[in-house]
Every structure is written in C-alpha cells, then in structure tokens.
Length: 417
Ligand code: SF4
Ligand code: SF4
View 1 (tube, helix red, strand yellow):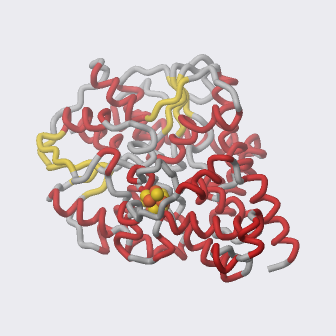
View 2 (cartoon, rainbow, N blue to C red):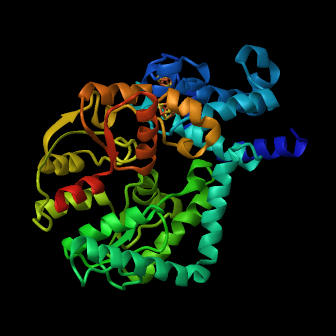
C-alpha cells in the first residue's frame, strides 16, 4: 500500500478513535462469551469472525501508532503495522459481518463490537479497500438525488401505470398513489421495487390513509461502507422531502437498516430533533388492525416469524409484527431463540449485495435454516428486504419447504383472500 494511504488511515484512525472505543479496547477481558453469540463464528469457527477478534485487529493497529508500549515493544503487546496482510485480515473481519449486534447482547462488560467494526469499514473505504459494489450503489443513490429533476417525468409515468394496476387489484376506481402531497399524515419511503410501492399502496387505500409516496428509496448503501458523511447525504434526501411536505410521520418500508438509520441515527448525526415521527410499516399495520381500519381474514397455513436484527434487536419492534400475525394466522409458531436473541439470517451489513461474500453468506445462514426447519412452518415472514433475499437463498441451499414473504405481503394476502 502507498505511504499516502497509510498516512490517511492513521490520521483518520486518530480522529475516529473516541473515548468509547478506547474504553472498549481497554476493557475487553477476552472471556470469549461473544464468540458463539455470532452466527458467523458459531457456524464456521473462523477466528476473523469472532466478535472480540474483529475488534482486536483494529486495536493492534491503534496500539502500534498511538501507545508507548506498542511503539517500544510491539511483539509483547501484539501491536501491528499497517501492511497489506493486516489490512486484508481486517477487511475480512469487518466487511464479513452483518452488523446484527447479537454479540453485544452477550458481552458482560457491555462492549458493542460493531463500533470498531463500523469505524474500520469507514477507514478501509477511504483507502479503497471496501467492496466495490457497495461503493457503486452508494454513488448511484447520491447521483440520482442530485439529478432527481431529470427523473421526475419517468417517476410520474411509472406511478400512473402502478395506479391503474392498484385500482384494478383492489376494485377501487378512486384508489391513488399520491406524490408530493403537502401535510400528509404519512410519507411512505419504499424500497426500490414496484412491489414495495404497490403492496403498501393497497393497504393505505383500504385504510383510507392520507399519505404520500416518497420519490426516494429507504436503503442507504453508504451506511454499509461506514462512510457516515455520505450516509448522512443519503438520509438527507428523505429528511428534506419530509420537511418540505410537512408530513407528520415518515414510514419506512420493510428495510431494516433504512429504518434503523431514520429512527435511531439521524438526530445524532445532524445533532437536532426533527419535527416528524419515524415509524416502520410493521408498526402502522398493527395500528390499522387495532383501530379496525383494515380487517384481514384468517389463513390456515402455518406461519413463523423471523425478527430482522435492525427491526427487533436494534429498534425494539418486537410485539407489533406478532400481533399482526396472530390476527391472521390460525397457526403461528415461534422460532427458538426469538425476539432480541434471534439468530441473524446472515444477509445484513450489505452482505446480500456483495457477490464475493455469497458463499460465506449461505454457509453462515445455517443457524437460520435450522431454526426455520424446526418450526415446520409453511410461511416465514421476514419484514426486511435483505432478510427476505437471504432466507430465499438459504431456502434453496438447505432445501427448506417454506414460502418467504414480508408482513405487508401477508396482510395483502389476508385482505384479498
Ligand atoms: S454484529 Fe453480528 S455478525 Fe458482526 S460480529 Fe457481532 S454477532 Fe457477528
Ligand atoms: S464478551 Fe465482551 S469482554 Fe468477552 S471477549 Fe467478547 S467483547 Fe471481550
């Protein structure tokens, strides 16, 4: 690696290493309790997947450059130079992590290994060692936001086509997919698929909601790069739209990390409170059913539920989807463990989009496949696009006889059957 890149890495590490990180470095007692909490380590026993070791790799570089013992006696403190070998190992440890934070729930000291992991991702991104596809996807989102005016006509045309389909599907000639509606109760931010728009539009129309469709998508690819400045720019598209339209609530589609960012990070990132609430579509579905705004019928197929890490463990949305499923499914069976201790499916952290991680992603989905198999369910509901894609992949690999769908899909089936 070039001297320039090395200097850049060290200077960014100096800036990024805050008090909390140093505390984590100093307080890890190497008890190993986090190791088997990680689905990746548990299913492979590869050392780079052990949560504390992922953190240790950055700590070794930090020691070498910022501590006296690391400078004077690196062989004793295992301090490490920044060289290709160290960075290749760090890249594996931090980019092959789903960011699920299951490890942090098992650490008796309260260490969250995703803090050094996210920082390391950011450092590696800045010296061009991040997976190229994540960079391209983030660039695309930022470029599209800058040139959104060029796309407006195309967007309106697409929405008009969807509107015709919507009216036909729910037999309502007045059903609408409004865009740019000022003072709407809800600004719905979909994932970038027509299905995500159409399936939510059906429910909003049946519930007679005063809503508006966002012209942006909920994903945030820069977040997976640990590139917080660009992740902020991507979030800002939605924030600006919500402020301009003066909406009451921003409702995020079934996108775990997209929801997590809007719900938990934007106030911290921008150091201010925003005048709108943020909810996930899963919460809105539960409210509609509780308020009798939609009345789904029962289905007889056996249903299980996968708690997406960013929705359940990291955002606390746990009982709402269960309430919806119990209203619909005659047979609902939990996976074990579940809720905030649920096993990660293996697709988060951007892994599902990176072809070079496909093998490890499928391999480390073994825990999830086992859980699903044990329920003997016919349908697995997973309200996160990454989880749905990952569970669909492992379904093929592990011969699971189960249909994978989102909660919005389940509600749509129950509303139209
Ligand atoms: S965040 Fe998840 S994948 Fe990453 S180290 Fe922790 S348990 Fe493992
Ligand atoms: S559980 Fe906590 S203290 Fe124990 S090894 Fe893991 S990070 Fe270190």
